Image (cartoon, each protein chain N blue to C red):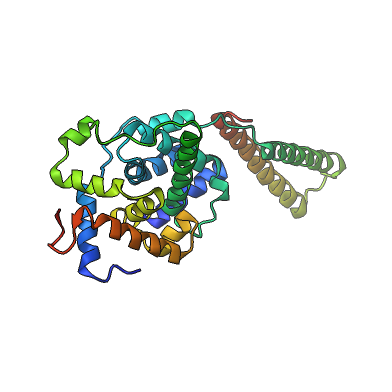
Length: 183
Length: 110
């Protein structure tokens, strides 16, 4: 993980000198988090995740001069990735393509998953896109509500409502009372 | 919303354990780098080139003025000071011009 100072130095090199080696270091540092975030939004579609993550990085490179440093670079990347994911969903919806891999035809990853992983994935599947994004950012990526609101471009109250609704839906799959065992 | 209760902490742990984890992909960064657009020629390079050219011409003009107009039958301290200043300035200009050209060549955008 890059220190804040190192991150700023690399961004400055990209902005001032179009230093691609510096941008490569930023990509290397942020790609695991970004791909994990997108992998959970796409419900495990690895190829789509890699495509979206690459597109996110290219857009970040093209728009790096517009990065003002008010939010962290990671938050900015999450926001671009979120927009990319939604553009892709809209495109698929318009072209009537399937949204995500169906659980009835489990991939190798699904076959190898433990019962716990399958239950969590079923719980996540019960959420809509907004709720899943909020849950992924809050519980899996550990982002605070303020940053999630900035990433999703929604008021903080709306993010809190989404998280509350998501928890209520996940209760049907995950046993909340009995120390988070599965139903 | 702070994760102020055990319920949220436990849910976070559970979701992290059961969520999808991205496998390492050593080709990801090279693929991104290959998709970046070609470098566009920088317009500010031309500003730099023009300024260097102007500085060289001014420096050459100063040398001409110093050699043509000066009376060197009696060399004064002022003449020596003028020569030293001009030599230092010329050397600095030569070195910075060479650096400018080499640096531009390495970036491929002069």
